Image 1 (cartoon, helix red, strand yellow):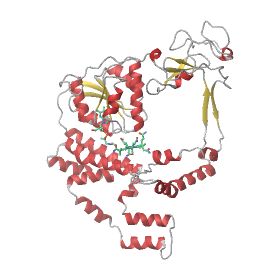
Image 2: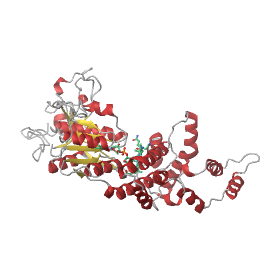
Image 3: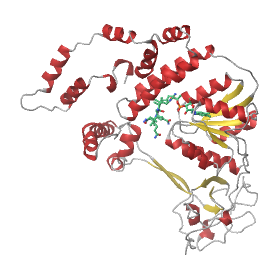
Image 4: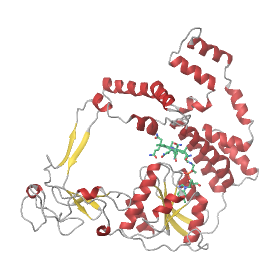
Length: 460
Ligand code: B12
């Protein structure tokens, strides 16, 4: 879809929108022909693009800037920004005022299902272009005051806020190592080792990102990191970040870029500690033995033998069968952007049946007829064992630790998935001895061929 050639729903007059839907769904009734009604409407409402443009240009300057973001209008953006600067508006006031208000409006429209993704992207482009234009006009104060490694967390592409943080810190004398978007924690920590920053800044706007941030803090704690971490992004709340202090005490919440700057000033000794007042206690390492269990998990009578070890791929799967398992709610709401806001069950169901479901069925039919979707499943069996709070996954060939998983524990020291696995180094149970690779000193088949990467001793 070329977003430049169509109007988003929020810019289509309500009457025209309703008539278009009547026509698409052929809602003819006694005395009403949707096609005739549609033609009659557009004959009477011939849009004059020149008039529309004139009305836009007649808006007061700041309002025009806000509309530019909402409507994704790039042409003439720089001229408007220049005019605003000449009129004495400060670059940061323009960003925090009309431009961010526009972005907020876009978010609300998207959330309400009135604006589709390509238009959000256009709005984001206008915002980015405006910020890039204004940046050189910002006042720069001091330099060499400190350093931050900054990134949008794994799985998240939103970077407008993060880049604003970069600009505001840089213009206030801080060096920012901006790692970009979708950055895994391993990469963030590599940059921490290379640049030795005063703090790490993590940004994320998706609800999912708040969980990624939590995992990142656990990862850092487990590796003995204690440097300050500042978290920001619309999905976070101050109380959530406060709770994260139990995992990583030196973590702070920044509601916006200015709070981020204030935190950096404090953390680098350029401002008295107010937001960071409480001296961070040493991070607690989880002691696995002390974890109380509400219900101990008993020993399994036998360990079932896996049908094979390693990875297999299944191909030639039946699309119709798979379609049956698609989580449509997640698809329509999470991916296609349909919102249920303000709708009761019936209205939502009607919307799904009218709009989303026909598209799904059409795509499915096309995929089946044209063969452009070839589902494959990758699955495998691996030896695993519990170590403390982690589940270790071993290579069936070498016994190396391939992966470590840390599952959440139920509140109040309840159960965790790791409780259901046998501990590392446990005596083999039943058949296990026949197929489990053993320690290097051990007997039996499958003895590890190479040294274990993480644990000198051997796999189990
Ligand atoms: C623009 C936008 C996009 C653009 C992003 C372009 C870009 N390059 O950034 C595009 C179109 C790509 C996009 C994609 C998606 N988006 Co989007 N997007 C938005 C939107 C409208 C605005 C975000 C924005 O830029 N705000 C302006 C900036 C300045 O604000 P900010 O990021 O919050 O940053 C400020 C503070 O939070 C803080 N801050 C932020 N980070 C940090 C870090 C530190 C260290 C500090 C100190 C401070 C700080 O300082 C900043 C400035 O003061 C929001 C709606 C909203 N109201 O937030 C939805 C929104 C975030 N998106 C949403 C969704 C669902 C998606 C998609 C999943 C949609 C889809 N179906 O594919 C994808 C996500 C893909 C992915 N894997 O990430 C949802 C998230 C909902 C949720 N529950 O998780 C939102 C909330 C919209 C909605 N109402 O539903 N999106």
